[in-house]
Amino acid sequence: MSLGVSELIIIFVPCALGIWAFIDILTSEFISSTDKIIWLLVVVFIPVLGFVLYFTYGRKQRVSAKD
Image (cartoon, rainbow, N blue to C red; front, side, top):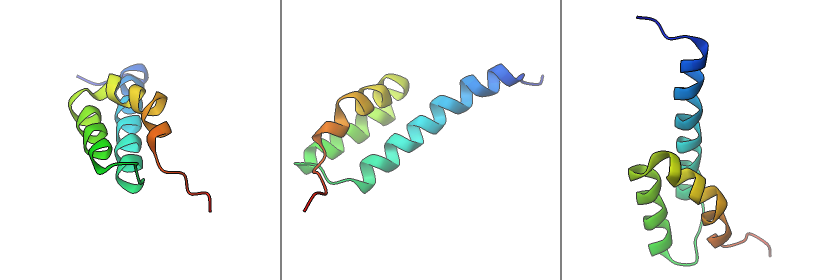
């Protein structure tokens, strides 16, 4: 059984976005460390909805790097 291009895209894109969200959460500072843990759990346990929610709401909770 071989996968077609559309099946590979359907598998690859959510995985890539999930990994991107996971790395972004780990490398960012949040207002509280609890927020970081909660977002990691959301992205890991609710994969597709988790990264959509993180990119929509979670990135706004990060500490800005403006000095």
